[in-house]
Length: 79
Image 1 (tube, rainbow, N blue to C red):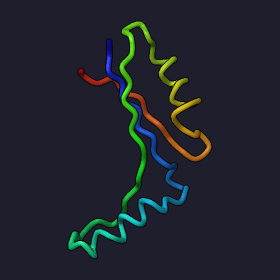
Image 2: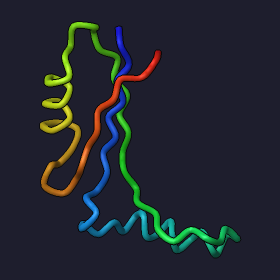
Image 3: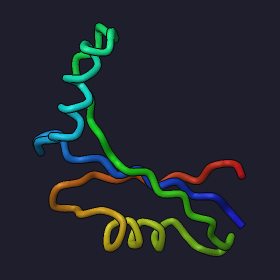
């Protein structure tokens, strides 16, 4: 078995109201120096060793992310 992480983030040109809300709240909470926050999603998958990178990319693109408005990355990590 392998562990795979898929990170999904809004494309840079897409507005990110949740990220902006966090960025606006940070100074009110006393955290200064943060100029931008982008909020995304993280998926962790346990997959059989024979699942190839092309299959993982297809899963990410068709189910986990909306490729019109989101970018995604797939990476294998140590279990």
